[in-house]
Length: 324
Image (cartoon, rainbow, N blue to C red; front, side):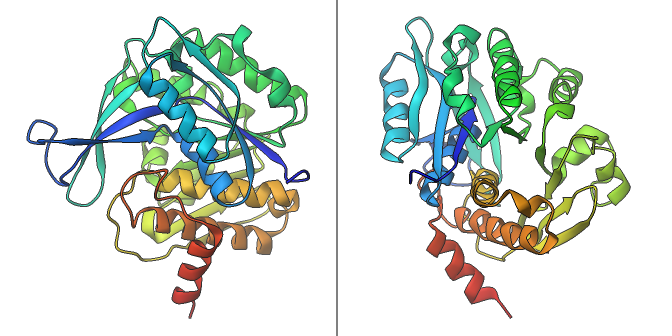
């Protein structure tokens, strides 16, 4: 593991309360299962499950749930040297409804939660400087002081020559308004080396048709080495300055889409960490994205995000079974 490149993930980790019955509203649900969540933390766990090396940076409430979550990171082999606790704020919670098709709706308890209160002075900057890739979302941009900490962390990474990976993971209910969400998400757009968005997020950010190349290409910027658009079970599309294309997905029986995008991102970042040349070599890029598609697909076949994250052999089995 000594030579395995470090991928640092920054942002929120929380507890999702998921109804024990699918397809019912929060009001109708009689019981909830607690599941660790938060996209950046899911990505960190996805990376270690695939044999990569990851660290998580974020803040938790100094409460039973916060310590439970940090223990889950440790059990999953994620470096927790960048974790801190807040004695005055609670760990964030989200109540999630699973609709009949496995898609989700959220109700959040964050007023303010500990993750929003991370300060720049609490950042483990040495950890960030050791990374090959620094990965983050947009939820940490919503309020201060976390936004300032997020900006400082990005600057630390950039100055140390670390690749910046951005998955906005739009959660509209957390933003004051739709306009604030678009403005906030785009405020750091031009800093990233790699951006992953879903087709729905393309529509949200551009107000255009996500199927159209020119709409997607309006999201490209000069420094961007790779833009990935995920199309759910259909797979994904990739855009660089030199080439663009599509990599088909894997059809599986989806039970719960939670964490599928994070599983995809974790898998891709593991491949990129091992071999930076995949950004310039279309053949290698397509292989990495096919593997990421398989990891995303495997993750939907089981409930929850972290427990459903695949091992390399889970993904390879799916790829073998579906190859023509």
